[in-house]
Amino acid sequence: MSETALQRDVRRQAAWYTRGPWVSILSVAGFLLFWFAAAEIAQSRLLPGPVAVIHYVIHESLHGDLVFQLGITLWRVVASFVVAMIIGSAFGLLMGQVPAVNRALDPWLIVLLNLPALVIIILAYIWFGLNEAAAIGAVALNKIPNVIVMLREGARSLDPGLDEMARAYRLTPWSKFRNVTLPQLQPYFAAASRTGLSLIWKIVLVVELLGRPNGVGFELHLNFQLFNVTAILGYTLAFVAVMLAIEYLLVQPLERYTTRWRNKPV
Amino acid sequence: MNDTQRAGATSPFKIRIEEKTHIGADGTRLTAIRDLSLDLKPESMTVLMGPSGCGKTTLLRVVAGLDDDFTGEIDMPAHSRLGFMFQEPRLLPWRTVRQNIELVAAPGFSGNDLENLAEAVGVAEMLSRYPQELSLGLARRAALARAFSTEPDLLLLDEPFVSLDERTADRLRRLLLDVWSARPTTAVMVTHNPREALLLADQLVLLAPRPTHVVAVETIDMPQAERDTKMIDVLHADLSRRFPANFAEL
Image: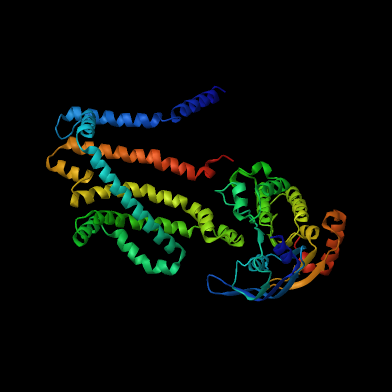
């Protein structure tokens, strides 16, 4: 009897600290503490502590052009993302639904999947010049095969029963797409966007490093030559913060909204 | 709109299928239907009964225009509206019950009509729920409401009451009769349950095993509302004697 009371107690305790953001906050605090301790022990210009880095970020956003550089990079991320999602979805859906198209394009897809990002970027700059379109195109081209693979899976898993329902009730093609097809693809879009954003922003930095006169990647390159680790960590931290904000303030709420029918308890 | 509906309702539906063949994944040809001919009387309930796997569902899909790959013809008025109740409810899980109905409803079907229909089938309280929150019985009711919301010229029902417990199934059969008598339309139902067939049918069509064709058409004159268990027993005994192959399954 006392055992069950104890078990209940343990369960209540577990419920207390898994509720709310406590675990996440504790985890982030642990990381900062570790970083702080490491920097204190190292006492090196090459490993600045969190205080110095945060101070740099604040100072550069107020007096430097950190905000401008972040904005430029963010715009490139968004542009590449939109281009990659539109082109990738179109091809993915087509390949998932028409086996002949899939057979024809599959070798291309495999080549593209295995082509290193760096090769695509270098060739894009050589063939199309050191310009914005080449940069964004090269990033998008790196992401497109992933989008194709996921959306092709989505198109293959469409429920034939619902398709039959839509045809029996004579839905118009647009109505069928909006009400029957698109909601079934939603998880695949969500997965493609999630992995897409993180992959794209990393590649955007490489593109900026190799051939753009501004952006976070350009700044990282510059500060690498100056061995300014505080600036490198500062820019990284600032951009990670932007991506986290996008994830928690944009992507997750949107996903909760589009899957609200699934979250309801029975 | 009423005019076209009346025109649709008075001209009979004619089904003539010379041959319907499936080609399996391994390339084998399987003839599901051969020389099947059937006329549907307007505003009557035709029930198709046959051994399982005889191609009843295939037949419904051909009649619904979901499968064009057959020889023969389906003669029905142009622009006929269709209501289809599948074996599973097949509601869109990401749309509420109300949205599921509105999506397919006939052009003139008002919010008021929708609520009346929902009231009649017993899902009035469920209109703002998502299908996953409903029991199978309630989801079937919602699917029934959806089928009637198109104000169909032809209502197709593919074993709509399977995998329900007998009491729920029986309640839904009575419900179907009520809603159908209030909104009469030509209906075709597929079932392998002889009692269900005898309760609902104006015209009972017995089908042969694959490749299927019509074995016999029995007309049951008594109105559905007046049929009781005893009468169904008598009919059942009589038909079992005359068509042992079709009634052996029970």
